[in-house]
Length: 389
Image 1 (cartoon, rainbow, N blue to C red):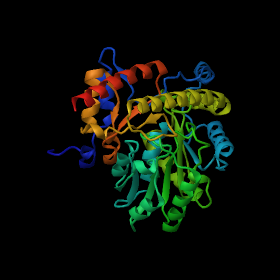
Image 2: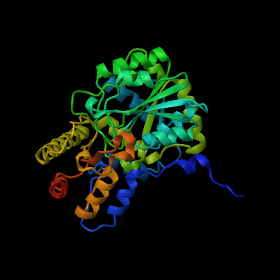
Image 3: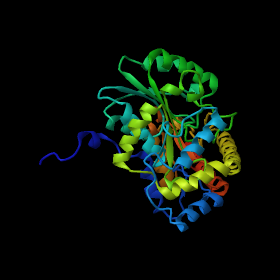
Image 4: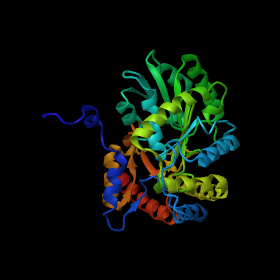
């Protein structure tokens, strides 16, 4: 056996996020602003429900689709928040994080040679999952002058007769960009006209700072061609609970469930019971955390302004994406030197696609105290680079 490994798997590049996380974990007095993980503990009433489920011996498999009560609460939540009606029996599946939903959603839709449109900069899993599903990724390089929003013209120009799916990654990781209703309406018109599907990753839907989040699935003609993906990691500070979900037409969910059944069986049972509590009684927790994130967001934008560092204003998620092109070095070199010289970890923008080159992703899912120290160090680092010139 001379070639035991999959060529497709070997072609994938490791995540550019974890590289810096692994280094900083072994560096004394370092501050990490690299990982998108809330610094809040999971709210106590949610943890308590998980503990109660364990105490009551609720440790068995659930149905492949997830607890009936949880699927019902997911539908209640989406009706309440987005005015979208889903059938909990046939149009919802509970997954191991939003990441699994992305994977099985693409595998359920893709035939070899189909094209998947991926706007970048965006989450690192989209392109590898498309490749592993047998698709050809078609990249749209989003532009800072458009606030990293996907425009109708950009989408129109990327569509071919092989296009099957558009991934819509908003609110966006890493840029913090959002899409407002008028943006989505223009996009939806093109999607319907060209008869393609949308995978709408809305994991940051609750973390928006400019009006209410709008799901493209709520627009006329779009629910039947959208896989809506969300989860509990970001909004409820439940990253380690590993729980997400997808809502879509029953024909699609049926096939996603089949893949999930063979690969996973079911999402973690304890996490599912905790998630029911989160959806029922977690709105105030979200409000408190969103206010804290917004305070940190404004602090960082003001800090960049004082440094004369260019950064468009992001209105979603918990990331800022400052431009570092003035320093004439690749984003990976900038991030590496910043870590080595000032002991602050951020993620180079090109980890999220080629159009992220010249930018740096900084997460503000960290305490304000740590952000203040990090910005002092960044100011020192930038002054050193400018004085050298």
